[in-house]
Image (cartoon, rainbow, N blue to C red):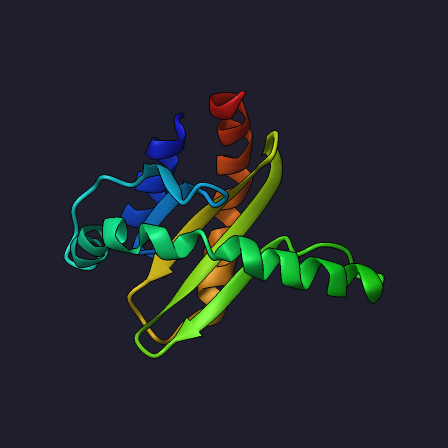
Length: 138
């Protein structure tokens, strides 16, 4: 199954995930995104292109948190979950998929509630997406 198929599956399922995408954070470039239509995902998908430039700033977040994690002997940041006023964002980071590039898989929820569910479903889908992403970016 392709990464896009898995992103579509995540968005179509009855869960907190309303949008899914893969971005080259280093270059602020969208590599892949879901393409299924739904009432919740359509407005997010329409605005995702405009938001693409902001996603590059995730590299700064990782560069800030990683040294802190190392200093505390906790390791590097693997993912980040953000609660927003009207939803949530979940990003999984893959610094070694492409040499010199930080790749992230992002999920968006249109619901302000369900942060734990967002993480549960994100973890479930990222386990399927990561191996396919490694193949597609090899």
